[in-house]
Length: 420
Ligand SMILES: CC(C)(COP(=O)(O)OP(=O)(O)OC[C@H]1O[C@@H](n2cnc3c(N)ncnc32)[C@H](O)[C@@H]1OP(=O)(O)O)[C@@H](O)C(=O)NCCC(=O)NCCS
Image (cartoon, rainbow, N blue to C red; front, side, top):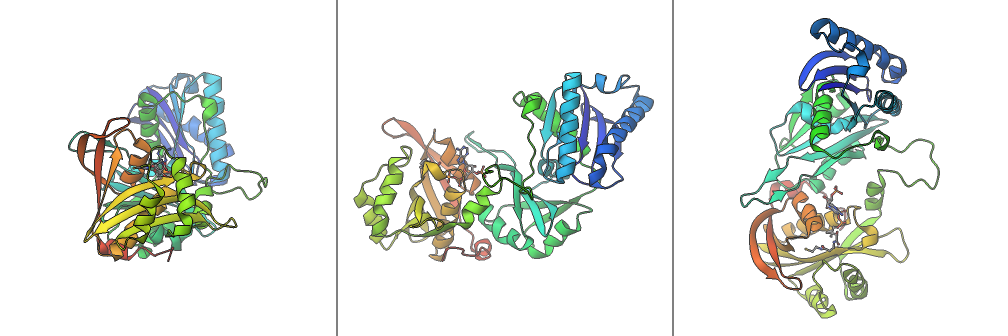
């Protein structure tokens, strides 16, 4: 399959022509990132000419291509717009399939990392950085598939936020490689701010080969992607935006900034029951069950509330119980109105932090085999499958998965407590 791949998201972009995984020609950009409106077209011409001279294809340029793979960001606004607009135009004119590839994912692919986790980092300018988190898919011993966490569209952070952010997001003790571009001094300098437990890898040259590889892989294994559905990962809010715009990918960070996690009190029981009522997949407890756990010296019921409303709104809760160095996450739920905004993850992270201070070294939990949403949260928080209990649940009958999270003091100690 003949592929035209290009990256216009930074000055280190370029164009390549590939026959499956074989590179027929590659041209690196040698100008600034805001000149792709001219240079992209001349680079494509030069790449075709070079491939034709060395390999005899493509005879008819774009008309012979069979796939377009293009980076969709994050990166320069202008570069992303030019790249996607060109890809869409050519896809339409020559009736070609097109695949958009995240720069963060391409960076990780180019680095061919050995660790389970990768953290691609890019300079976002204006004193900020783009950060992604990518986990390799793993197969557990009894065949259950642990889903990878693919936050390839990433977050935008200030450099000082990186260390606490990774402490909250990555499982403790996880093998992690930070992947940066060789020319990206801002990203390289972050090495000083992280512990030596992180490995580092700098990728040289363009990402075009990785873009072609990922585009082809996605085309062969993924769902059909109509050209019109291509989306840009701008991440950063445009400088000028309508006040009502809600398309901002940073909303999760803003939401988390307004979130406060504290221990539940008797006064919170009504709100907890209200959330439980909206979450049929949570264990259905009575008020007395929660009240007992709140007053139990070995109980820890945490609630997440939004400080931006008056009175604060309860967004979710997590109920733990511990004995000696082992704890159990017995129940949790997030209000459907606030799901998928990081509340569940922060509740688990805060529980982990507090339990560690109480000398707990392992947290167990049970989850219905069909509850894939909760499992994704738990696996991404570092829980691992321990065993499966056949027909453990009733109404409806179902297997339970037993998951466990090992807590390691050294790594946890570096995580700041944002919810005293
Ligand atoms: C499970 C639950 C607590 C997750 O809470 P949440 O605040 O929505 O979760 P978060 O926003 O913190 O998401 C953390 C991760 O979980 C996974 N996840 C959460 N919701 C998901 C969904 N709808 N689909 C796929 N994955 C999802 C993702 O991996 C997510 O990370 P990402 O956003 O970076 O991709 C919530 O869905 C819930 O209340 N479910 C009903 C009750 C329940 O099942 N309780 C667990 C009983 S064991």
